[in-house]
Length: 194
Image (cartoon, rainbow, N blue to C red; front, top):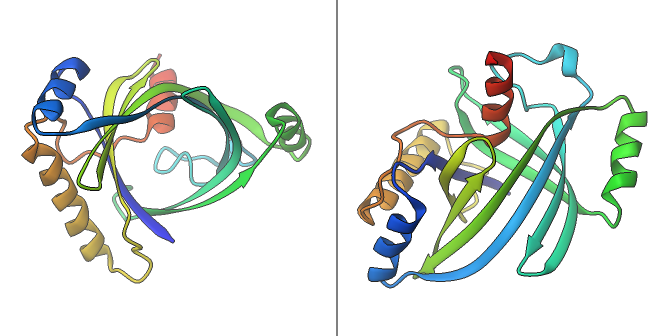
């Protein structure tokens, strides 16, 4: 399944955004903490255009006390301007992330970055908005479209993303326009600048 999501920086406090959503009937349905370790075997071949295309992530997820551990590969479909059009995910449950990390290290993978964040998901009428407070970056909002975009054109995907952004704005939320945020890429670029 090819997924489409948008992630935007939130340009107001989370509390302000939550209050707006609650007034419109949204309910908090889930909270979690996530730690993603991004590893790659091609660290010397990485380009600024697409840092994460050849990476796997080791994900630790705690949803209200219940732990999940996964190995995830995300294939990013990127346009000529470096914008992510869609992604396909492969997830494998993993009992021991430390051993998985050792396995990848022995296969020549190196650590790219670690992304830690807390998530609060609000829902109404099947629309889930995930607020992510990311260490070192700040607050973001993510909206995933559950439709399968496997046979969609780039134009159709771009139009869907535009409609998703408009939907978020229709709730009165203040977000950064048109620039899709990728947490790991943002953190890596921040380190490169420093």
